[in-house]
Length: 290
Length: 57
Image (cartoon, rainbow over all chains, first blue to last red; front, side, top):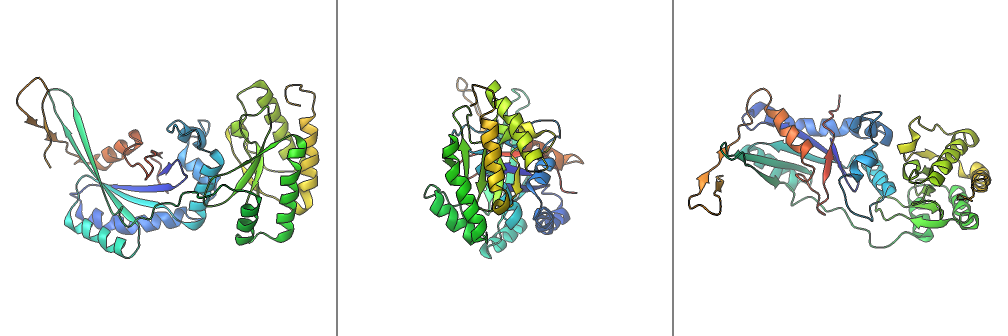
């Protein structure tokens, strides 16, 4: 399994061209794997992709990209969208394409079933030690490109998207109260740029990124993984954990320092408590944080 | 497909040998290539795909 910087999940089955039966079987295996993965949570997917005590999935992906506009929250939203909708990139990696497999891929592609084949041919020179890898993709032509954001998110778009996603008007009203109260706590509102869902987060002057927010699915978001670049960030991260775990009763994971958890949240009942608790930890006696 | 190679200071190209993926570890060799080369299966925007090598149960 793999994942790209946009959070698109990629499932790859490796097969040898010589194994004719395996080649046929793989066409049935891919939908089976996709069906098994659909409906899993972000945390389950992250557990599959990482070693428990090692770097988080976000940290691993960040090591491979140089895009300064890349956002952990958009990445996570992309993964969650894929897991929820079952929209995965399915790829067969094979050491040599043949007419039979090519015919299957073309047939499926014409019927809007997205199955790609990556042919990998490798050559080497024994004397110099030089290796050459020649990759060729089949089945990409029919694959629709993921739509790029055409407009920045704002409250109006967020509200429309939340309504479209089935969030109740009372929940949206409470999230709006949260959104409008954050600047009064000294925060700058940051908006996401993803296409699957919208989010906003609160960024304070002491933090390098937004640290708490909401998405248009109605989830409460924490970006613990973005806090840790300074002592002020680390101190706030710990207080934010205490707020989430003890004041709000949320199941914060043990290795929360690297995580970006999201939670179903009763905004109608708990927005007031959330705002009061944030105000309290912001005014705690750490001059560089206040 | 053939791949021919030469050093720019020399005259003749010579053919590279195809790497054989066969044998019991053949599929594992393909998997290792993907895991170790995030740019191999890039997206439309050229962004790399990070693989874990994990399999669904």
